[in-house]
Length: 505
Image (cartoon, rainbow, N blue to C red; front, side, top):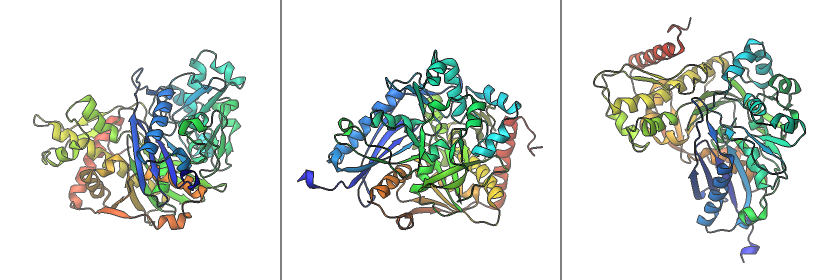
């Protein structure tokens, strides 16, 4: 009978920047069902990006129910839930009503650029970096929280009285899933807020004061694999434990089985985020990369160097929705292959500034090298090429921090990794092999693995790593002189956007 079956599925909630997805994995880590729903992107002003938290919640529940129905199972057949989420995005809600006080402010949002500049001018960045591994940038959560406190009527007073709660998206979903019983996050998400001391493993009172974030807002911080409460039965038809949480890029690192120092994963979604596992000790960057927590198990953090590119797949969305020169993302590879090889068109996609290693929130995008013959094919090629060039900038900075002599393993995932043209160009520009896994849903897989391991369904990390399998390896094909010329053109274009000399002096 169905009631006698032992739950054998893990539900991964993959809440991203443009859509909510639910993926069911069986006991062998194979995908049983997938459901996805896009939600509205809100742009109140230039450089501002918001989401409706209620729409995120509704799409999350709808896709979870849809995936369970597609698999032909019941909620009781799900042993555990793992959550992975867009990081840094901020939600503040009323603890009594569960209602958000404002739209979610998304990681891409730049409204607090002036605040960050003022904090830098006041000399706060060295202390923040030493404690959090991060830089003062609107990308991170804390200045967004402060903005809400300053701009939502009554928010500051309600927060001081303990009536409001803050969370990144994982925390908000966990609160709703557990009927408001659990206000918690994991160490990977906490490490992205500018408020969490990554070496001491706790919220930092000094940072809360400097960044004007009331302590009463903050959730409890737990391991990435652990007890996060149990869902209300009426949501998915059963009370299901939540046993794993990790921010999306960290979840991808786990899904790619990058458990050994020196292993690197790069995820190509709306943005691109590359993480290099540096082991049990944090490596603080000299090249404006981030030091972050890759995952935390049994109270012990594993650290990583991270480089963040704000625009990767978003450049393809711009071609589709802004310029309307394509109807579907898949067309870009075909167009790029057909582009005129004699044209050197460069797109610097600084639509919301440039991330690592530049961290310039004020610069904006530009296209260089246009001729009368430039058309959709050249625009498509430039958009895809920009992803490879930005990844090169990150990889070179990581090598300088990690050590030139140490070899890294690069594993790719995310929507853009499905493009053979893009991955081949990435290998050409990096002058290194690029490995694409057989299972490309690595972000959801990482969240599922954390929950399933904790539930006793999946093996320990070393055995899980043995299940990783290669779908295709891309190796460099272009001559060194061509590669050098292409990179020189890119660096000249970036220098012009940054309004600095090409040599960086």
